[in-house]
Image 1: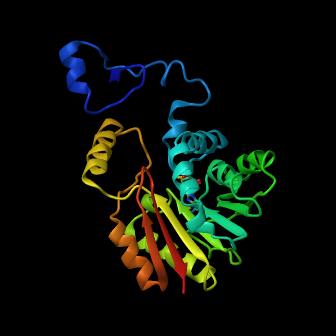
Image 2 (image 1 turned 90 degrees about the vertical axis):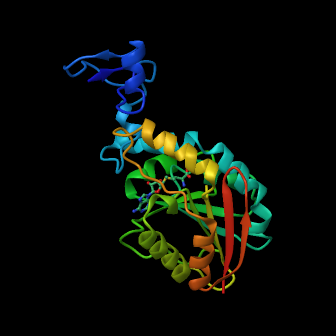
Length: 249
Ligand SMILES: C[S@@+](CC[C@H](N)C(=O)[O-])C[C@H]1O[C@@H](n2cnc3c(N)ncnc32)[C@H](O)[C@@H]1O
């Protein structure tokens, strides 16, 4: 057992042996975690699927912590996404509503609903206290169709969590839910050699700790899938987080 501030089994093990920076014992440590981070149990940020209210809060909080570059990318693309006519937006797998609330601030006249598992409702409703145009729709996108009646439907850092057949199924549910002229938005990091190298590093570093898996897909995969489902005018806006916008035919 290697006992750092955080218990990580992986690439640093060899260096800890060489430099003597870890204490190597055959006993379980008395406590786990990052010493100065007391807000929830250490595993709450990495466990998927979350099983307790603490784990849900920890997971969604860690997602919200990474939201600023995503908000920036979506804000920059808001004219292409919402145009002048879009009024109703559904953010599928929208976390605790951090991204939707921030964007709604720049979108007068638009209302946004976060679609998420029922356990996340309290977090989104708490955020809605300071953004009255933010709503919540409970659902399980793996088990149910997506709700109808929205002008814009987004998957932000969602599709990359799922294998190709599931991601294609979710895009199909979006196609079924959207009326002609409505827009679909995908925002995540697409595959480039640099991102692949960084992901490889983190995957190795967090091996045995991180229960979440995300894949870097090529944007061409999405373009092909969207074309096959009858989406047109597919635009790709590259950035720190890439944005794809497509229109339902
Ligand atoms: C990687 S997080 C992304 C959160 C947010 N979109 C963001 O970028 O900050 C994935 C989100 O999908 C939600 N989710 C996972 N499985 C789901 C399901 N079966 N139905 C609805 N939402 C789900 C999670 O609760 C979480 O909010």
